[in-house]
Image (cartoon, rainbow, N blue to C red; front, side, top):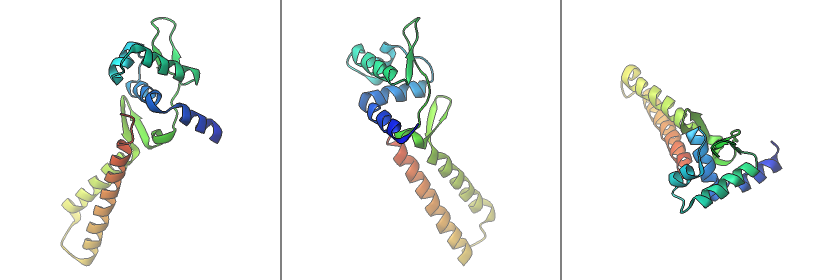
Length: 148
């Protein structure tokens, strides 16, 4: 996907269409118009249908012939989705794993290797704490950028 295609896709995926795409991505299974309407608290099924059709027109979802459910054709990594990793039905900010990893090793250092308040240990304590705080802040910041 080149830059102009990506820009057009980002323009098409905004507002409620973005929320519908996120829901389909998160659920990982085909959804009907009413399911989308209820999940996203749209005022009518026609709003959900409009946005599902909009996603179908740009090639991100397909409509099944039997049952009329919509399913994702493929995943795109645009906008905030670049910063997410999908595990099953769950979407996690990539920074969450960095934060978890650094915090785990920081705690292990404190529990096993910390011997006292020497100059070296103070540097490691302060550097480790700063790195953990930065990663947790970034994970939270990306988490708040999700569509709902």
